[in-house]
Image 1 (tube, helix red, strand yellow):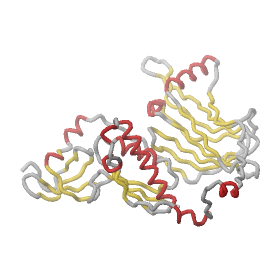
Image 2: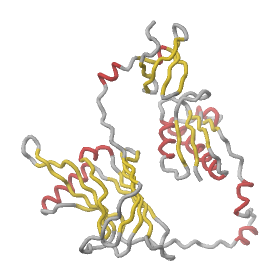
Image 3: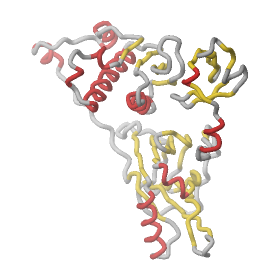
Length: 337
């Protein structure tokens, strides 16, 4: 027998580690992965030692979530300028050839305007949040955010902000979002320009003027009614929606009778449109959860769905783990309202 009870194993198709907890027969064993127990054929698992010795060691970035920080004190001198910007200060070190190389960047939020803002900030690497912060920045002051390793510029860093006024104004927007991406070549060019000008930092603009509130155009409902449109009271909208589903199967043969005439990209787009349709229905009906069956395959549909879910404010959490009905081919979505 190749395996014994207690042996550590790795599931080949999902690359997850687990252990053998029972021997079923000469072809199957019972395994446990992340607290979930299920049977597996022996050709679906392997010992993890080869992977441990051959795989490139990846140093996982430590995620930092900050709920409460002391408010930044106003700078002794007001900043001169306009707008809100990100300021980057390169920190240099000597390499083996005694040349100056950038070790990291110190990141500051700069508020040159005469109004203060509340902000929510996400630092995102490869579409995954690495740093989260909620705080305020006073008028004409700076706010230190964090350091970012120069090597991390290879991981497509994105700086996502949501701003609102510290003192709300009836004519101003309740909030608005800004996002900024930092690329390695772009940053290297900025640093070279900075050194040529004998400066210590460079800046990138987030916005200049806080936006006005968008005026909503009032629609004459009587004209719509006369034109044949159905008008419902807001509180009764859900009564006239199509019924929601708690489980949606996105296998293309379940969605279309003509799927064999579609190419791969058309199929993926069609599946994502159906996913969005049933997702919107679930939110409109205020469902607590929704199961999306996407299958395993190469994982493209699953990855696209997970990328969409990361940016949905209604989503409390989602999980793609072994399910007794769908295996690893389904994602369970849990909503918050």
